[in-house]
Image (cartoon, rainbow, N blue to C red; front, side, top):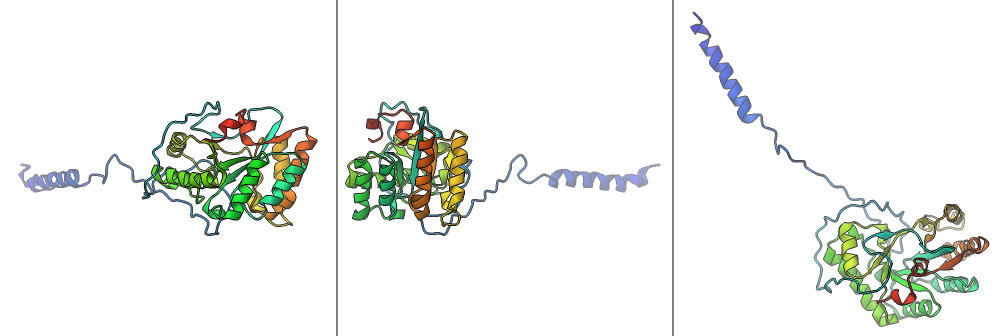
Length: 293
């Protein structure tokens, strides 16, 4: 008596089969990831672009590099750790003034100010960006060393290290090492990554090359306050950071107002608080003999 319903039953069965066969989620169980990189500044270095956070992107940009020196484990007896970004001094009563991106036109004047206060600092040198390869800056580098300051690496071309391959990171470091060796006869064991960007891969590569990685816990943001009308902002950032216990200070000797105004203000405040301005290696308790390879 129900035979006249068979076509409907067959239709429903067919529809169920088709649904089961074709309604399957695409790429089931997987996720499509989209990564958006921030656009690097188009300003020719020395830059005034605001540094991004130290929470950074993993390296995914393929990079082809030339032959580079194989990584090797550090052989120094230094007690300063590898494989981490060091943000703070470990020794009491000291402040480490660090200046990135030089040497530059204003660096000799900064050395004069430091000498006036009997203070010492660390200079994280960028190679290509400030024409360190030229002889006039080689003379400035020699003066930095002769006057008891510390020199560190800031890479050759101020690259985003998390955007490039381990071989390319190695090439950034070893290219500048050759210039250091030629001009000052030594190779640093301290470096600061451009834009304060590192990830596990970068840290591993730098450890293999024998570098301590230095960050900051007191950013003066002088790169964003380069005019006479705004440099007071950086002075205030320093004051507040020092009051909060900051000890590794980030500034740049490629900015005139940093040298003419900020440096003197920082040194005055350090002196008034009974603190001593020292190189970053000293603020970490590292003997001077371990600052270079």
